[in-house]
Each structure stands twice: as C-alpha cells, then as structure tokens.
Picture (tube, rainbow, N blue to C red):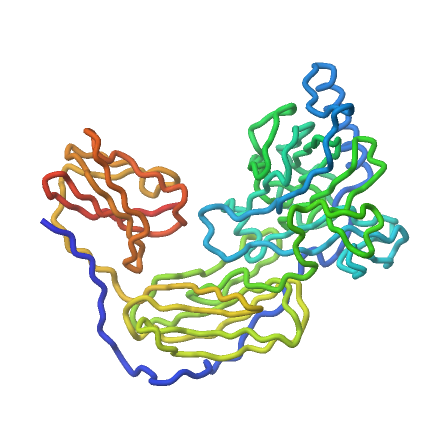
Length: 466
C-alpha cells in the first residue's frame, strides 16, 4: 500500500516569457498609531500604580520575600526587546515604534527624544510621555484577538504588582478604566512597567514570583487609556519614582548616559514586516473592530491573487523591489516601487496577478538590504491513498497537540503543508509507536498528516492547526 501526493502541473492559458510591471496603481499608504496623542496613564492612575508597587514591595519585605537587597544591589539591567511574535505567526516582524520618552520638561509642543528628534509627544495639560510605545503592525486588532504578539520580560526580576481583568478594547482617551499590567523589580532596585496588556492574558505567576529574561508576561492589548493594541514600557531607577530612565543612550538623553539595552536598536529601522497574498484587499475598519485580512495562500487555477507589502519606518526616496515568481522560478513581474514619504508604518498593494500555472508561487520584496519571500500554492492538492480504517486523529481543528487513535503501531509520520512540502518528519522505535504529535512550533493553517504502520499500512489525514 502507498500514499501518493501529487500536484497538477498543467499550464493553462498564456504565460509570459518576460517580466514586467503589473498594470494596477497601488492602494494603501500610512498607518498612524495614536494620532490624537493623549496621556496613556492619567495622573490618578499613575498615583495608584506608584502606591500599588510600593505596597507590593513593603509586603514582600515584611514576609522576608523581597529579592532586591540594597546592600548587595546589582548593576542596572540590560534589556532584551520586550516584544516578540508568537510561534504560530509567520510574518517577518509584527511591531512598530510610535513614541520614545520625551526629554523636554516643558509643554505643549516641546518635544525632544533621546536622539534629538521629535518622535514623542506631550499635552497641553503638561504631560510628557514617559515610556516607549511599541504597537502591532500589521492588523493590530486581528493580531490581538489571535494572541499573535507576546510581551516578555526584558530582564530577570521579581513581580511586585500586577493588574488584570480590565477592559482591553479601548479606542480613545476618555476612559478611566485601569490598564492590565505587570510590574517587575530588578536586582538594582529599578522597576519596569509593562502596560496595556490583553485582559486575561497575563502570566499565572503571582506577586513575589521571579521571572527570567524573555519569560512570557502577557499578550499585547489595548487596556486602560489607549487607542489600540500596544505596549507602554516605562522604567524607573527605584520605587521612589523620582528618576525616570530612558533605556536608549543618545546625545539628548538627559536621564542616563548608558544604554539599558543589551543591543540598542536603531532610532529608525526601515524594514519589511510582512509580504502577504490575499483574496481581496484587506479591510481596516474603525477601532476596535478586528481587521478583515483576506489573507489567502491557496488559490485555484486562473484565480486572481492580490499582493500587499507591510513596511516599518518607510524612508522617502527609497525603493522596494517587488517580484511575482512562477513555479519554474522565472519572473512574472519584477519591478521597483518608489517610496515618497516618511512613515512609521505603511502598507502598499492591490497588485494582482492571474494564477495560471499550478504549483508553488512566490511573492517577494526586497527593502533596505532585506529580502522577504512569501510562498503560495496554486492548483488542487490531490491525495490518493489506501486507508487504515481503524485510525483517526483528534482534536481537529487542533491547537497544540494532535492525538492518533489507532489499533496499528504507527512507526513514522510526516506533516505536509498545502504546497506539498514536508515540514515535520517523526519516527518512533518504541513498543507503542507514535500516539501524538506536538504542533507547538507549527504555524496556523491546513496540513496533511501521512501515517505509516509497522506492516506497511499508510494513510493521509487532513487537519487544521488553529
């Protein structure tokens, strides 16, 4: 018995022997986060946070559980980047920076970031932005709803306070609802605030528990005073809250001379966050409705494919090279797209092509020395197999683990994606055979599971990873 996995290879219609530009003018433009620029922590909320963290420290001290020791205090932490994409996300990147710390104590319209620029904000009430704002890009609400962006501990330390259970779909600055947050004290006594997290997503660890560098703290959300999912990362030297820290070193940093990053990222970091194919242009509705992404990676022959790119820190006068590549690795389209404005985040697309050859196609963008390639499949995936009637897989759809229920000893298993690529192969020599498969590191999507028994039996099951 055997399993045969084949792709249609018939060429239908006219194919070009040369590359050219698509005829469509692109749509898209700038995506602006927090355009109204209001305080993301009210004075009342700030006072509550300072009291809450100070009380947490005193409680731990009274219980002889406080990790910080002034006599044996360490040096200030060096943070890793506190934002990461979840393992099931296959975008190139999924964040952008909207605001740094404001170093000009006057207000309004007196702006100065660590790099002597104005990538920050203040308000008429006298508020000066005191943290780093990192937002989701692209598809912020969709990403939040699907737990795509994780907040992690920038440095090891002790949880001295946390707040959860608060509304997390804020869209303006009129709310008085507190944010969801985790507060961590480090070995030198400094305290980091991780704010605006998603309701119910926070770490299960409690006040007094230690966290390690890179440990999961929560999902990026829009709780508290906010206009969309983002992280407000704020650092103080100690619980007196008299000396703010800007983690970035720079000419105009008046707070600290040294960087607090293990590897300080550039002030502007032009790059590609995602290169995606769609059934139609994505829809960006009003806050807080989740975006309709229309992302699609499996197309029928002669179906229209819509192409988009999603950029971070777009620089005026630069060029993105774009390619639509046939299954034989020749270019259907290959052209340069000129960028004429400076944007913190942008999206461009609506370019279409006709999927007239079966097989694996590629949509590719090159920007600022970086190339990102997105593969999509055209044509039906055909499976001819002889079945093992006693075998089933569950749950389906599944999230983390796929169980195999069978009376046959399964000696090998292969997971195949919709393009026909083998992405995971498992062999087992023990007495019970393969009974489950860990899918933690596999992206969401449709897959095929090919199973082989010890006597040559074989079967293919279709399953969905959520």
